[in-house]
Amino acid sequence: MGYKIAIAGATGNVGREMLSVLAERGFPADIVVPLASRRSIGTEVSFGDKTLKVKDLATYDFSDTDICLMSAGGSVSKEWSPRIAAQGCVVIDNSSAWRYDAAVPLIVPEVNADAVTGFRAKNIIANPNCSTAQLVVALKPLHDVATIRRVVVATYQSVSGAGKEAMDELFSQTRAVFVSDPMESRKFTKRIAFNVIPHIDVFMEDGSTKEEWKMMAETKKILDPKIKLTATAVRVPVFVAHSEAVNIEFEKPITAEEARDILREAPGVLVVDKHEDGGYVTPVEAAGEDATYVSRIREDATVENGLSMWVVSDNLRKGAALNAVQIAELLVNRKLIQAKQRAA
Ligand SMILES: NC(=O)c1ccc[n+]([C@@H]2O[C@H](COP(=O)([O-])OP(=O)(O)OC[C@H]3O[C@@H](n4cnc5c(N)ncnc54)[C@H](OP(=O)(O)O)[C@@H]3O)[C@@H](O)[C@H]2O)c1
View (cartoon, rainbow, N blue to C red):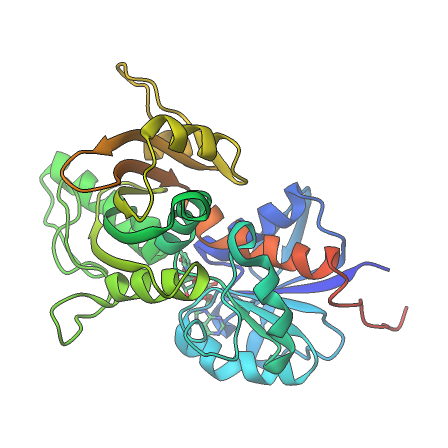
């Protein structure tokens, strides 16, 4: 018997991608149920060649559901994940609501799959922030060989990371520039069309933003608490896929050539690094793909054992939906959950 999977937030950017990824990867699900707010009851979403009708999360009974992939935002998750988990349904959550809870595993399967074993404490597993997921996939194989001491990262994050309304805002502002219409900013603090904004999530007391803090805290939890990380998170007028300029200091010597060879063998990574025009990956090529692409790998001679590189991945896939489905596959492949008995 296959599994029964619910997708909470199925009408959103990440939820729709979750439905695509489940279908593409042939996840062993007998039943897939799309859920969202009451506003979306009856809305149709695609699952492979099927069309499914959205149901209301607030009135849904999870008692015979095995896994809920949750991507309905932090406040919805805080309220609903414990209730869903209490019905014996494992929640894999995309928001930041549970990531820093010591009793909740924060998982990127290529990096710390073994940490998933503690998930029964709360029946909740957290997916990292989109920028962290692609970063740790690229850092882990290098850390294993040369031990990372410090990371300095600047992100170039696409508007899809802020939800479907943010994508609409970039589209309508871009159009407004060309037809000289008045422009409105609702999702972003400043105009995003033909601009960049060095501000994602709320400000912290020390002047950094929560997005920057998340990258530091999550890298420590997933990869190694000893790694020091400082980030500058920037929103750019790109629809899908986040880019990162990453500078790394290692404890042991490592050359650019060694790093390239290590990353070529690493799970989830594709190295595209030719020293010629276009010999690197940009967000347009990474959108819709599963890999974390690494380009522009080079030695940084200004520090001992330093490397710089450029990391690009689809934030809706590895940064969210794909990673969540990979966690579900981990539970199934390691036989950590059994499909519940359901009436025929
Ligand atoms: N986008 C990314 O790159 C990314 C990456 C990692 C994590 N995440 C996280 O994933 C979550 C979803 O992001 P998104 O980009 O998909 O946002 P989105 O496009 O704005 O979609 C939000 C989804 O949540 C649903 N929802 C909102 N309020 C609800 C409620 N009270 N009850 C039930 N469903 C409700 C919406 O349903 P309606 O259509 O009915 O309103 C919609 O399906 C967020 O927590 C986000 O931080 C996003």
